[in-house]
Each structure stands twice: as structure tokens, then as C-alpha cells.
Length: 367
Image 1 (cartoon, rainbow, N blue to C red):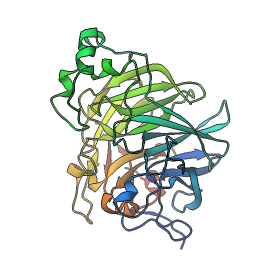
Image 2: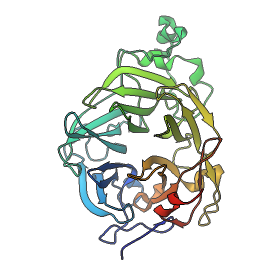
Image 3: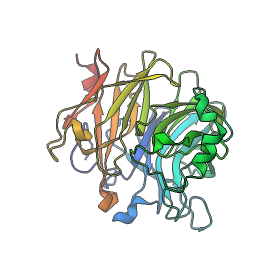
Image 4: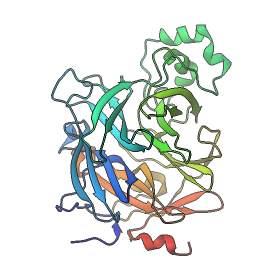
């Protein structure tokens, strides 16, 4: 049955009646069509690793989605960096007008290495639906210091002391991170990169935004003109705030961020921020969530039970932005749910109010 609204409960069926399997994803609008890319999950806890690849769906109206199959397939070769069973998360796709290529970036953890690789993978395709060809992975900006580096971070003694640190750094908030020079210790081999998103600015420049320094600090990095590599131009943002699940959008010349804290699969309170330049400095705003999800009883303190993944500007409609969230179900990964909410702008910033069902006419109302 054709849908004519967004409904934030139950499954979201594709044209085959199957729940949309595109988790931690993002949406590209190209030539009048929307393409939704996300992690293809399988049943059970095993579904939290990549056994299939990145799924793609297409839509003309955002309500009804056609299954376009797997855009990027993981490899059966156990020596491949994207071997079946690796961690392949938060895929995002952008279109490069210079090259005519579709470029996908994603957080990559090599098979059987836990979350120690902290790499970024890139793939390219000639068509929005793929197939995407895996190119390579790396830790970003090897050999380069951020534009806002502090003098003490370039101190050789502190770099060496951090390299000799035997205890593992966790990916969650601790006091330990601030006692060591994590940034400096990773300059030579490249910075860690986990949860991520992409953003293309009005001038065609593309940026890679990712959790770095054992998740403690968010990096924003300019990509090369072909969008396939990093330029070495980047900034550190929100040091020791442990921002993950980042998404960035632009409105009226200002840049806005939605992110979450680092609490693994468990939800936490959403963060928001604003900047005049994408590279910063950024100023944090209040929790942007309002209301309660009646299905689980969770409100702003837990982001309705979800976590941010992307903000979608609605094509051809002024001041219309949709915030996309995942309601993770790690015990049965394929059953994760999607929540899409309209963004309302306020004098203090912006908000997403829990809305059980809504449609695009919401953006035409006096809000």
C-alpha cells in the first residue's frame, strides 16, 4: 500500500513490503531522486558486523522506497579490508560534479581487530545505485597537524610518552584521555576515525566529519577535489566531549550539528551546536529534542531511544530539514527501527519534537 506520510512506529516497508534495511545511513538527492544508503543487517547479534554490505533504496517522494539491492558488497576474500565479518558502519554517499562519480565513505574496522583499526574506507561508482568499487582505507591526515593545534600537542616528549602508554584507551569518557597527547601520537600514522558523516558545501567542497582520538574529539576534514582523500586541512572540535553519530547541515549561512554522547548501543541525550564556518569554532546549544516516544517512554534525556545519523534537506522546499535517527536493536540488529522528525528552528537554535505521524506539508505550516 502506498504511503503518504512518515510514521514513527513499527516497520517501514519498502516496495516489497520488507522493512528497510539501511541502518546508520544517509540520503543523497540526485537528478530528482532520493537515494537512501545504509548498513545491511542480518538477524541476531551477528548482524552488528557486515555480512552483506551497504544497501541502497530509491524514492521520488521520501515516503515510498524501492529496493535497489546492495550498492557495496563485502568481500568473500578473508584478506580483503572489507572481508565479510568486518565492521562497516555509517556509510554516506556524495556526488562529485567534477568527476561524475558517486563517492561513498564509511567507518571501517578490520576483521578480528575489534575497534582498534579506526579507519575510513572509500568506494566509488558510476551510478547512484552502484555497484560501488572499494578503493582503499586509511587513518585520515597522516603527517598533518590540525589548523587549531596547540603548541603542547607538538611536544616530542609528550608524543613519546603517549606512544609508550601500555594501557588501552577506551572509547567512552574517562579522565585518562586528557592526560596524554593522543593527537600528537597519531600524526605520523594518521588520526583515528570512527562514527562519521559527509557534507558538501555550496562551493562544492566536501568535508569528512568523524570521531577521533579514541572518540574524545570530533575532527572536521576537507577532502580533495575528487572526494577520494584528505587534504591535510582539518580542525579539532569539542575536545574531550566524546561526540559520536555526527551529522551536519547548513541553513542561512550557518552550520548546525547534531550528535550524541558515547554510550555504545544505549541511547543518551542528543547534542547540538552551531558555527559560522564548518571548520569551527563551534558553539554548543541545548538538547534539541522535545517530547516523549510513547512506545518506549523515552524523551529528550535518551533521544526518544534513538541516535542521530543524518539530516536531510528536502529538495525544492524552503527551510525544510528532516532529522534521521536509528533506534538500535543490537540483540537482533536487522530489527533496528528508523525515526524521521521535522526540524523546527527557534531563536535559540533548533528542535525536533516527537511526532508520531507527519508529512511534508508540515514545512508549509506556521511553526
